[in-house]
Image (cartoon, rainbow, N blue to C red; front, side, top):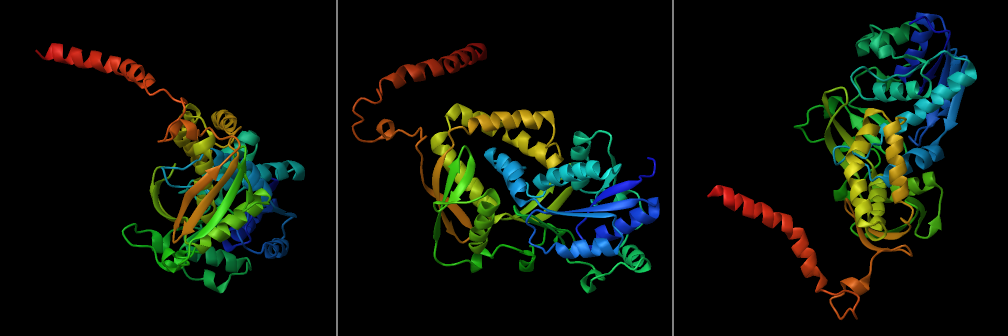
Length: 406
């Protein structure tokens, strides 16, 4: 790859991406533009501006993307009830395509010929960043310093930082106990003290969720209202997408909901262990499932459930901008046309349970399912023919097996 003239760097303001900023300048002699996204990670981002300016960034972009993140990425994914390997709510995975989208857009605005990220060569994020970037601009150059440089240890990184007068926080000089990635949907903790899956994660790993044992002794009810598959109100109060997820995080975190200890299969081939906290997402998934129970036709719901694992895998592996994900999204969104109504959840010591749901779009007919007199709504004699027709092929198979066994 020819040396880039201007690079847009996904910049957190932390030590690693600050080292990358300086490395790009020294390695290529290029201008570096920084982009810092506020996805609800709960950190003050203005210090990143001061640090990028001090280090000679040619332009600095800091953007609040919380509403776009939830509206255009999290909510569409939750319409699918997406879970990777049956458990993971894809909190890190779904953030990467939005960051890549803005990297590519800023590169076009700034006249940059490359983008750069701080993902390592062992993880999934390198794939997610780069697949998204190439899908949006097939001619963009992507620089991944962790796959290029010889700064292969914490000692070498610190030495590089000191040589180039990059400020180092005191807690960065030693080994961090674990690595954290956070956004409005979840907090992910990996590495170091968590690397042995045979050891229980220490309590201090939890960032936003109360231990279930320490959660309130009183249950709490919360009502979530949906329109066309998206949450629009909590306890009757209309809110924006990001505000809804923020409120659900607060409620779920208080009651110890959404903690997951998972050993997952990374796209690059290895297994990794992570502790995920997704309090608001766990409530959202339970509530969405609850409203679908009464508004979604059985055939539509079962078809949707059958494609969900593939849809979730596409997001996990970085194919958000792929044709097949967009095709699946169209099917999923069609299924949500009548997924409107309200669900009441009961929150108690780590659990979120649907206890009531109602909707003007409901398919539930009490007249058909009642144990009392149904006034002719359903003729039970019809079931006999239904069963005989469905049993016909089973009878033919049984007769064949009996015949050939003689």
